[in-house]
Length: 245
Image (cartoon, rainbow, N blue to C red; front, side):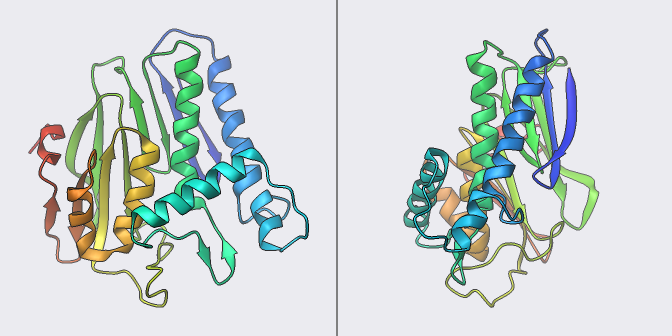
C-alpha cells in the first residue's frame, strides 16, 4: 500500500508493506500537514512566522520548544555549521523534515506496523522489509538525475542527501553566509534514523569538502560525497551498505 501527496512543498510517499488499513496512511499525512502548518516559514500564520515577526509574549508550543532545543544542540555538535538563524530570522527546515519523518515512523511503529518506507523530498526512513525483500535506495548522480551511482540496502535506518543540484543555493555556511557552496555537489548520510541523517547531512554539506571527514569521525554515521569534479569520497564503513560497489 503506497500513496504520495505534496505536503511541505515536496512529494511525500508512504509505502506500507504490512496488510493494514489505509487509515494509517491518513494519520501520517495528517501529521505532516500539521508540521507544515506549524513550522513553514512561508505560511504567514505558522508559528515560525509568528516568531520571525517578533510578536510579543508569544507562547511557544511544546513541539516548537523541542525543535528549537534540537537545533541548538545540533549547532553545538557541528561547530556552528548548522544554524537555523539567518539575518535575525529562523528557518528550522534543515532539521524539521527529518524530525517529522522520524515522528511519522514512530506513529506507524506504535501502531504495530513493522515494514514500511517513508520518503519526503529524497530523505528516507525504512523499517523492516518491502514486499520484494530489503529496502533498496538509489543515490542519484547529481550531474544526471536519471542515473543511479550507488544502490544501498538499509534496514531500520535513515538516509538523507544534501546538495544544491535540485533546489539551488538553499544551504549556506553560517561562518561565511555570502559564499556559494559549489565544490560539493551532493553528500549522502546514513544514520540510525532519518532525523540524525538529515540534520548531519545539512551541516556536513555546509562544511564543504571537509564535511565527509566530519561524517567519518562521528559515531553512527556513514557518508558518500560527490564533488564538482565528479569524484566520490566515502567513509570507512559506507561500502557495507552498497550492493553494486
